Amino acid sequence: MAIEHGVIKQIAYVVDDLDAAIASWVEIVHAGPFFRIDNAQATDMRYRGDGAEATLSLAVGNSGGVQIELIQLMDGAPSVYRELPRGVHHLALLARDFEAESARLERLGHPVAWALTLPGICRVRYHDTLARFGHFIELWESTETFRAILEMVEDAARGWDGRHPVRRFSP
Image (cartoon, rainbow, N blue to C red):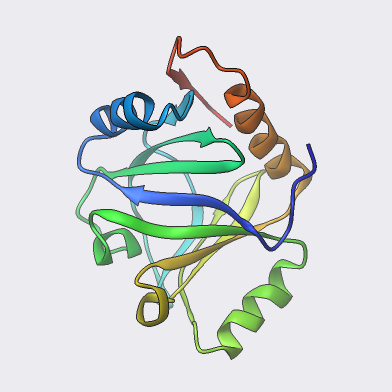
């Protein structure tokens, strides 16, 4: 499978109950399996320019070529997840040239609202497109490791028989 750059690869939702959200996506949409990470770790977090921390649990699974991310906040820290606390939170794009694409979004009037690094995986930035779209745009740095993770999740969904809908994932 070729990973496409500059196309929507993920739709993410903030949810109140991660287990219930996974069960709903599996039952209603037949998305999955979902790879779950509890208390996800990131570094270099910045929220609207200031240092930040956030604790969240998440799960990712595919419906065809689109990844569904479900995010449950585990703390009360200020973050982009508090700005849209339920429902569609962001769409994600993979950027071949991360810095250039981030700068392009900023020139279009969409500043970075949230930035972080997934150690050993990639850098991530959420651009504020709330006024234009009602949600954020998440930009992923295209690294070999991150593309392999995207492919692994999508490959698991291909031909999935519905068994073992939740799997633990530790990058």
